Length: 513
Image (tube, rainbow, N blue to C red; front, side, top):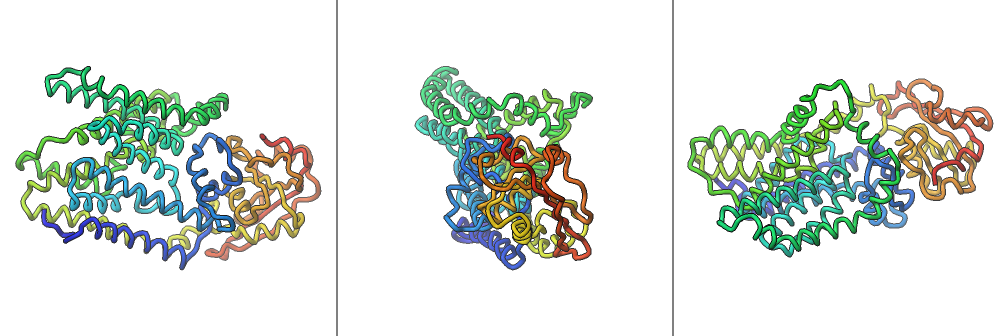
């Protein structure tokens, strides 16, 4: 393949990635936005160190934020630094796995650039999905460790530690753990038989390392697993809510959703590279036999998808989103790119150049999407329902303290986002979201000596408090409902209404401890 990256291809590829990150950094500095729902939720969690922060997300990312945040630093800066640290770790895992699959530096550079053309990475990773990207990054590096362990069993303990970290980042990483083990056993059995040794000799050689990896993984997960287990039926009911269980869904529907979601997950560049290599490479000279690592990744992807189909089908899920695949089959896109570029190496030079043009087209599209954000917030503000990023958190906090006192407040909010941005605006306040029972308040909320205030936000017209907050107000509010309005910065014809009322102290005192 012609080397369009020239000399030092990896250095140039990382230079393009730096330009991509810089484009978004400049955009966020020049045109600052408020916190999105994911960031606000993280600030809400990070009010205190806890073993668990509700059942939605495991605690690893919140622990990472609490460890990274310097005293006095803003949450906005901490969140952005953590976001791009995680994103670059994921891209490093992409290169690491490509190298483990036998790709040379030029191919590794192309695989890296092809992942800038991954639809999941083009837009939302710059604002959200950080739990998913973190789990994907850890399972990618875990895949690198498995590839090494298949050749040298001393790497299995690293696999166990990375598996535990992945499960603490995103619960669906458990499927990566199970599918990785099944694929490893299958590949070792295949290798033993191909050498005429049978199944047991290679399994026996790796048994000690596998048991050590399993022990380390379970040991690291035990405290969180114990906390998670005592949440009664919460985990099971939450799982059914996530996949939107429907007893009337056709038996074949979940499997079809996973297959279609897998195709969407590969968009744009990895899928087109794979299709181009398959169509044009059918009559080309045969490629070298796949390495053991290539076989393992292929088998892991297959096992992961089968386990996911079985799980979603068992829960009669009617909803599936491609981002769920990121921690489950993290090597799918890397494997496809390495395979496609390997096929391209035996094609005529003109087709090799077209592969490069496709990769660079994806890079150009990823960079151009940064420009779309210049007017996207203004367009969204005209019709947004919640308008998360347009909420004036500082002005709201000042207004609340002017009405209810200058000291710390305990704020029981009508939505999760409001709890996060008010905690960010004034760290002395403690916030608790009333509408999500699975999200616990910070430690010490119930026992704190501070006014207990219900607060909620409405768009365009003031409305009654959400039903969950009204249930708390049933004990009797203290005084009248106070409200203040602000025009939406990017849509001045629209109005945000902040409403609040003092509650009895026993309402906050009854918060989960």
